[in-house]
Length: 378
Ligand SMILES: Nc1ncnc2c1ncn2[C@@H]1O[C@H](COP(=O)(O)OP(=O)(O)OP(=O)(O)O)[C@@H](O)[C@H]1O
Ligand SMILES: [Mg+2]
Image (cartoon, rainbow, N blue to C red; front, side):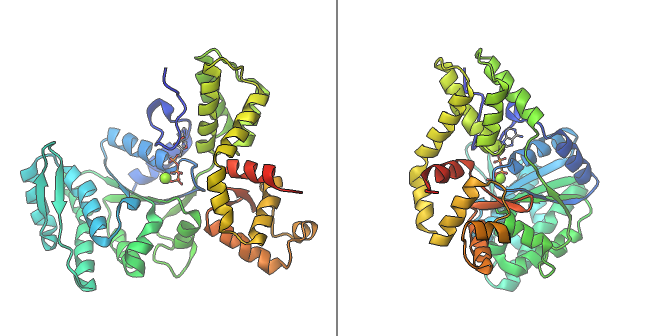
């Protein structure tokens, strides 16, 4: 029997837990033409949600495209990726795609070819000068609306790791995208990314192109009841019982973050397979063991931090979710002048080590928290 707990992969099919309301809400929004920004700290399940959402929309007869901007390292690659996902996947026959491309993206002079496996690929010329490039990119992005109109179907495009556009094309690309997207009535967009502070700045900062371009949706953790059923059933299949204390401990050691819940459960499942009983003690030991195995990574991270940042992490490890900038916490832990604490906190957020949570701060990686807690002097 395969381990039913997966982490580091997109959760699909039976591995996908809960998110019923989010799926219906976002699907409804996109079907009616909304633009949506999906925001959460790292590893809460944005990509998994999007992939499941697109599948649901395809089943309802909509066209969909998924664009992971981490796959593009230049504007040319961004163009090729967009062409591949939006243009090439809209048709199956080489001749039809080639004709479509000549008609709707003539500036790009696309050369479409087919490999041995029947996969289509496009070689595009987006030009050299900034002027040529923006004209070419505008033409390409507008192809989405043309395809949707021709097919008489709504097209939903998901941009994942959307914060990367800033690095790929700067302000001018953001402005270009905004003006193009605003003109589209048959294409809906969903934007998401793993760098929460960057995405938040894109949508909250009045001076940025994406300010108020769509609805901002914060994705929370997966509710306890959904995880409870999912976890209990999977352990029951190997005759292991998850008692209340063990379940609570799984959630507390992982801060209920989906990725870490799956990570810990995957290890626990292996141990139960080998005959261990699933006790709270086993959960705590396994979490501590996982944290220990990550020591080289954590030491590497600490190396790049100042003493003050390390001190702040120690305080954060003892008090998850604490308002670390408050006068009381700063005094009690002798963190020094408040403005310097704020600077350190901002850097820890920027580095992705801490995340904001309900006005306080929490570790992005709960095993790093465990490790800091265990290895710091009080
Ligand atoms: N709905 C879900 N059901 C089950 N597991 C999930 C779900 N959502 C997330 N996970 C778990 O969390 C892991 C990370 O999910 P995913 O990659 O979708 O998150 P993300 O928010 O896109 O992360 P990142 O911010 O790093 O891009 C998955 O591999 C899976 O283990
Ligand atoms: Mg993701």
